[in-house]
Amino acid sequence: MKTNTYKYQETTKNIIGCAMHVHSFLGNGFQEVIYQRSLTVEMGIQGLDFEREVEMPIFYKDVEVGTRRADILVDNKILVELKALINLEEVHLAQALNYLEAYNLEIGLLINFGARSLQFKRLLNKKFKNPGNPVIKPNPGSDIEGMKTNGVRKGNEIVNITESRK
Image 1 (cartoon, rainbow, N blue to C red):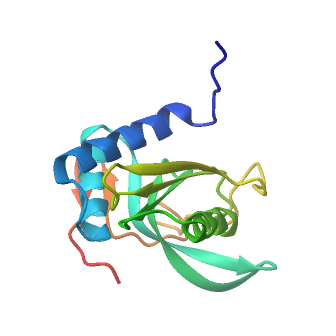
Image 2 (tube, rainbow, N blue to C red):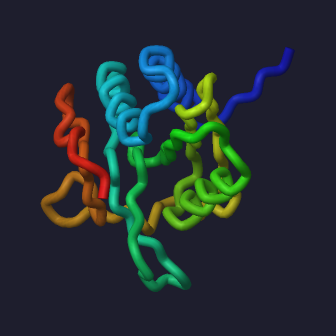
């Protein structure tokens, strides 16, 4: 039997496992921010490195045209986009793929906590430009250049996970 291997397979598997723990514990029916905070707690327990609500620039033809907050960025390379909807639709998949392209990230996960059973999709940005990520650029003196976060895991400590979404 042939098994597929994917880039960052172990990390995405761990993220999905964390999401399953959260969904099993909370069930469906809460707002997205509750799942986001709970997922970051579980990811911290599991030892994953992540940033929550990372403000990232959006570029059009190499010109910054705005910013958008990514729900969660894991290992500075995997986008985790969260939803709390009755069911995922094609528009949500298209939106998450657009974010991967705009941020020049190769791999992402779209996770929906709103359905009776956890829904998730592994995403691949076919337009990914290797080797570097021009969008993620650390500012001098910050942990992550070019990003503002509302919840960063530092060691075993998660900072500001209860701030409200803006």
